[in-house]
Amino acid sequence: MNAGFHNKFLADLDFKPYCAHNRYMGRLKYILMSFLALVIFSSPALAQAATLSLNPSAGTFNRGCVLGVNIELDTQGGQTDGTDVILIFDPTKLSVKTSDITNGKIYQDYPGNSVDAQSGKLSISGISSVSEPFTGKGTFATVQFHVLENAPTGATLIRFDFDPNDKTKTTDTNVVERGTIADLLSSVTDGNYTVGTGSCVSQGQGAAGTTIGGQGQVGTVSATPLPTKVPLKELPQGGIFDNTIIIAAIGTVLTIIGIAGLAML
Image (tube, rainbow, N blue to C red; front, side, top):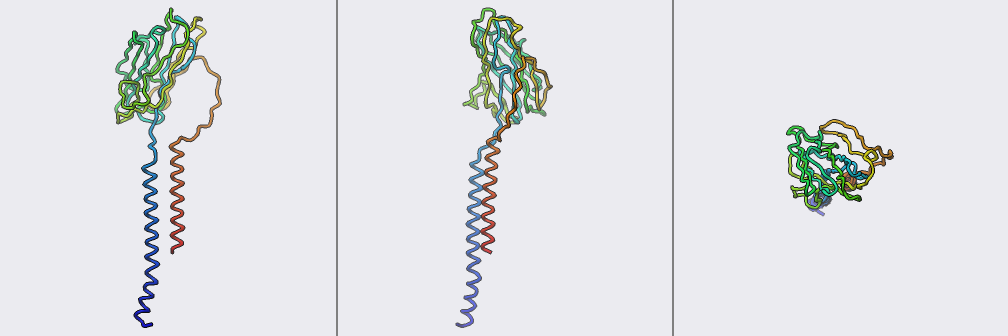
């Protein structure tokens, strides 16, 4: 074996493992990048989901008496520029005037309320200031419905005009996200009531509500107190759980790559 062949043989021994190592690490890098791209683009967006509810949402209210209802807004962390609420009620059982609507304090401006007594519809709009959007929980408004003296007894519904399947609809109830025209409203809680014939003293009334976070002032609730409930531990939100799984998966892949890299050294 001459010296030239011997040197070439030794060079091949040194070079081939190096090339194989580079090819192996290149494939691992490609797999990692593909995995990360899949995780990033397949992860669901963590959109905010605001809610609106009537408080109280049930109860018996008698003929000739007042049914006071708070409209409660919870932005669930989302920043809002404004909210439009449209309520539908039965005009054969309930009546209301614009003077029966008391605006809340969570928005700086309530540009105008309207009532269509014949069709049984009322609308309330609130707008935040340019520099201070509302985020948190609070009473959007309070409405004093009057139960008609000749109202038929039995069930009656006060509901939000809201279509959860059409986020582009702007003529129904909506909660507008800060700086966009996106509707954050995801669910509503309507009011299911019963018209009775007893005295007004025996029935509960709506209240002045509370505000948590954002603008507004804290009020008090004057409705009949309910039994205290033991709070349940809240489960993690789906988005947080998904992110935990993703981070764990990425950590596993990086660990495998590290072990494989050490084995090739």
